[in-house]
Length: 239
Image (cartoon, rainbow, N blue to C red; front, side):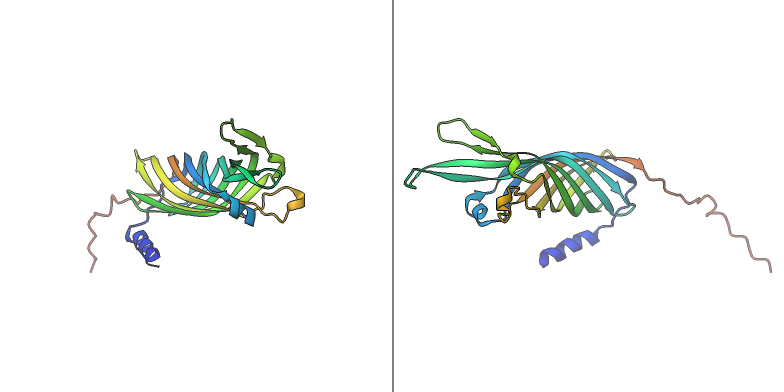
């Protein structure tokens, strides 16, 4: 509760700024913490690992603090695990490290609110939509090269979910800005595509640390008030 009050005080302690440009365009990339969830097997044997996200975005800026942020990029999701190899009697003879890589085309659409003057901070929330390019399971036996198995046909092609984040942006040279954002993407779709096991739910999750650079263009036309005659003397009233 104290953290929420503190953030609200920061937001309203500085004047919000009018956005003088209609559009921002930019590039962003991030390392990601990725994981899978949805059933007890995943919970027991899988663990979070490192993925990545990269892409471009376009923002339409409203005159005040709000903007629409739409992006397109490539994101790797998935998880890591250790799978046991047993003999005919069921005795464990080896632990095989593995990981599942889900590579998606990602399309986030967010509503963004920006505050501040010199240092700008922002919050965004919305949805993302993903299209699966490929899914590979990679196994590594000690002393042997990695084995990669393409299992894309076992998954549904589309993923979707909610996304939200917050970050800061540092403007420079009027039209440019560098930004850093922490964003979480919570998958709601069941991506398991094997028909006999539809009840075995698999959902994605990724947390991105996005580093970006943006450029503003198409400046808004603002009406100016003619003040040339404001200093003229007021004529005396005729009695």
